[in-house]
Length: 121
Image (cartoon, rainbow, N blue to C red; front, side, top):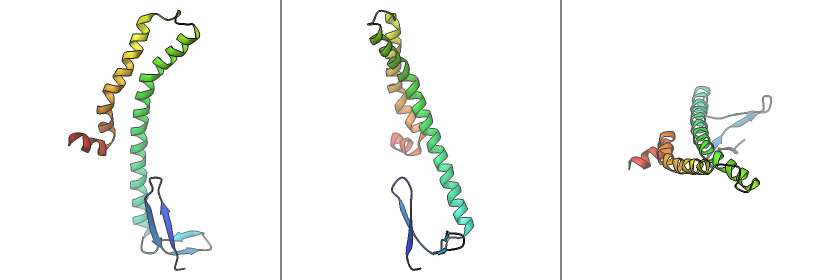
């Protein structure tokens, strides 16, 4: 009964809670934390996780949009030994790579508040 339960999150942050385990429901009774506090903590964590997932999705999609054409073109170029694609398409896809590099310093602060604070400093 005197043992604590450690709850940890994916980012290495651990919280030590004291309480007892109800054997009938097999769910921990978290001592001083009431259900409304627990629900609001879960709700805020879920909201934060959704924001992080959305930010990550935006960043990955922009990366894929900028890099996929170049990668695909290089695979096709290797397969046909550089004879089947017009040269201007290589330049267009190459400039997409530079566009991705130009967008990143603005995209990261837009998607995440800690980047925004560091960028403003």
